[in-house]
Amino acid sequence: MGKNVLIITGSPREKGNSCTLAEAFRQGAEKSGNEVKVFDAHNCRIGFYSGPTLLCEDGDEPAGELHQLLGWADVLVFATPVYFMGVTAGLKTVMDRLSPYAAPEGKKYFNPKESYLIATATAANPEMFEAVCLEYDYLMMKLGIKHTNKILVGGVAGEGEVLEREDAMEKAILSGYSVGKIGGVY
Image 1 (cartoon, rainbow, N blue to C red):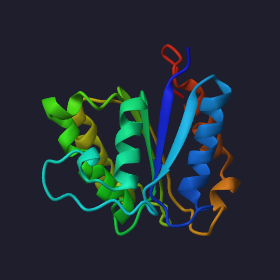
Image 2 (cartoon, one colour):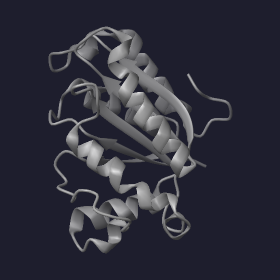
Image 3 (cartoon, rainbow, N blue to C red):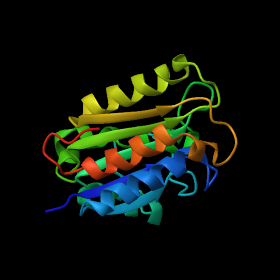
């Protein structure tokens, strides 16, 4: 039986490099029998974190939709370009808003058990990803989610440049395909 996969994208570019890798991941996950939904954190307009309230308590549609998806998903995938050594503002807002789901009351509404990180950067040096990975690792630890894989691709600036990186595209597809497979991490 397949898993429910929620991909949360943070790029302001619909066809940007992180979204392209997220789409490759989605294709791989669906091909192996998983159901995938995508949530666009950049365009959702969820309010900033202002205390320990669950997303469903906001009373707005995007927050309520995300709250429902968090209860549905078995797997979370975060996809973002790296901006100034961090995730985009939209994804940062979503990540901050997940904090209440680490508390016992929030756990009742939060289903994900494993996660993936997809990040792209214009610079090719691995240090570009350190802050993103640190924040992601801490959030996954706090939420009690098993980190499964990171797909970090530097040296891609222009829209669609990652398509020329066959190794990165293959890793995204195979990582998606491995969701739900026993021991199946690329």
